[in-house]
Image (cartoon, rainbow over all chains, first blue to last red; front, side, top):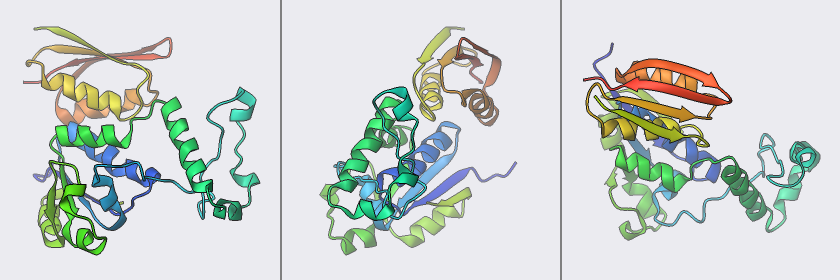
Length: 171
Length: 75
């Protein structure tokens, strides 16, 4: 077995769907005894904000996203509307909010943990969450916008930590 | 040696593993934890979890759509 026991993840995406992989894999790796560091950069930085209500998911340009009703009769819930609806329809104002609300209902119905829950577990399990200092400046955030318990650093810090890691993911 | 139980029914990946880890953290070595799940992927996940963490998976069984794991905490 390798002496290295770390996992490093770059979280670069900030939509509701892409918010899950870093927190799920990160928290599970920590539970399995890994020293985990997640570096949040560009759009991924938004996942460290106190207020996550702006997390959205869009079917726009994402034809792989199933569109199934999270409620209603069973036969209706089985229908995948995604191949039936032209992708251009998702350009219509309000459609992104609609898709986000349907996705959240689907997740709730299936008892999927929320991003807030998974993020809290990560902190509880000692996962190091690092906010990219450069992105904070670029997007005009300030430190008070972010949750407590995180660190602030740049690429060199990430690379230094990644040196001791045997799993290094870019998400 | 104390026996602990954890009801993780209804929870989906990765929550049963995370809850088990949190429960194990509060236990003494040689204590056992019985976890009940409904997550269909949990059998493979708990085998992998125990292999990686060094805890002993004493038994696992599936009945009535439930998956029950017996884990002994390592020293």
